[in-house]
Amino acid sequence: MNRSVGTDKNQLFRVVMIDISQQKANDDYLRQAAAMFESAREGVMVTDAGSRILVVNRAFSELTGYSATEVIGQTPQFLKSGRQATVFYRLMWAEIDKTGYWQGEIWNRRKNGEIYPQMLSISAVRNEHQQVTHYVGVFSDITQLKDAVNRLDYLAHHDPLTDLPNRLLLFARLEHCIELSNRERKSAALLMLDLDRFKDVNDSFGHLAGDELLQKVAERLTSRLRGVDTVTRLGGDEFALLLEDLSHPQDAALVATEIIEALSDPWRLSNGVEVRIGVSVGISLFPEHGETSEELLQHADAALYRAKNEGRGNFRYFSEDLTEAAKRRINLESLLRRAITKAELRVHYQPQVDLRTGAIIGAEALLRWQNSDEGMIPPSQFISVAEETGLIGEIGEWVLLEVCRQGKHWLEAGIPPLTLAVNLSPYQFRHGDIVASVVAILNETGFPAERLELELTESTLMARESETVDILRQLRFLGVRLAIDDFGTGYSSLAYLKRFPLDTLKIDKSFIDDIPQLEDDNEIAAAIIGMAHTLRLKVLAEGVETEEQLNFLKEHGCDFYQGYYKSPAVPAETFVGLLQ
Image (tube, rainbow, N blue to C red; front, side, top):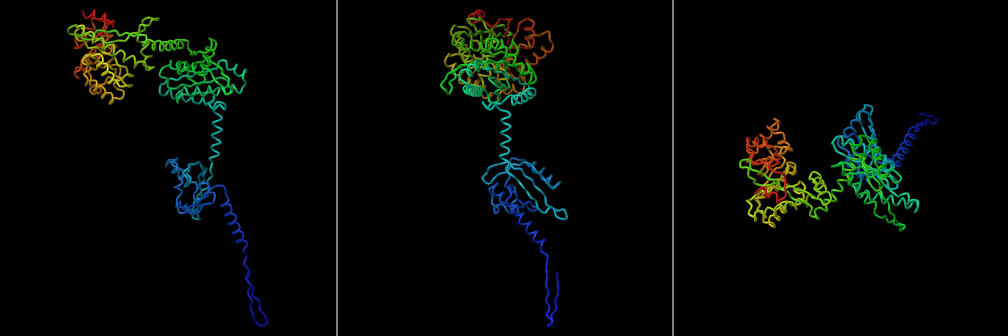
């Protein structure tokens, strides 16, 4: 309002009145906004259109550890944790450019280096021309929220007493195991365990003692298994084990036997009481006994029921045949360990014959086991057990020593020099120092190195190829002869044959059996002989049993043969008779 007033002396006054209520309201709003900005629990930062920080609130400093003076003028990139890939940020800014807003979970880094989760929202501020002038970011620390969610998830999938995975998590891991095993053609086993006499402990000493025993059982089970396996408490005194990537179905029985032995030991509780329990185990195999989680659980439970009905403290497969086979394998392992100390192992010799002259020029040493209770146990039953248990290392070294001793004895007896061939197992070749073992045995026995031939399979040669070549060269330097056994059943590559310092190539029996009736085998055998001779290797045919086979091999230039046509593997004294 503007008004002029006149007086008798012609004086003039002007009064100016301005309405500032809107300005007062604006000032109040700004004060309130500033108070909210500073008192907000969420961290807030405002940047310009180039993402340079203009202002931050107190909560920003409390949450990040950075003061306002440290961050103003910088871009928020110094807060990055490195947990998100570049594509994450590219998609985030694409959303902001499109809609003017983005909200989501992100991991950032505090000043002290700690990485923590945030819930972040970013808004674009535009002017009247729809140009971005500022960005406003609001964030909160959700560490406690995520911890709570993770804790709830953990409790939902784990047994609160033993801290083991529960039935729900077992199902999830079983489903994943089945999917992986199908894709990679692997085997798995599910073991159901039920504690024997646990109820007696509960009834006699109370539930606290029972709970403590369950915790101790859980610890012992966990300590006995591989990291890839899963131990689960299903409830009460029932547990389950998921064994993944089994190399042999009967390995599940070995685990079951070990668990039965481990849990049958006395248990000392904190109240000073010593208790004894047992365990019965039911086993189902994937894919033999089921292809779904439900089937495997049902069949393992059925096997467990049978184990408990048949005396407790033992295991049963869902298949009775597998149960018997597994028990047989475990018994063989026990017998085999004693066979070494009881001198039950024998070396037999199968003659190797020169195809041109018909003369015996050598022999392959083959292991035999004469058990005091079971009689002669064939290699097909015990060699795989020896390899899987590692006993093959000790057995293989004994065979090598025995053959060199026998060879030296024959030389001293005036028998013409023979080449004696000994099979090396993959275990012997990969574990321990085979070169040092050969040197020590040759020195101990005095057997000439050039009369010893070591046979290796294709798979043994191809494992760790460069290391294998180096070992073979060292053996060759000693004068030892080298042969590739069972040729044609593995890689059968001309390229790798050239790389290895070999002397002899042995054609596998499977290619000899149907000669000359099967044309394919005729062609394969002829091709192998030609290829080997091109590489200046001698060729020995295994498993020759008929005159027709012998004549075919002669016609195609094969050098040597062995097989029942001449003689099976026989004891040393019988072999001497063949020579004479």
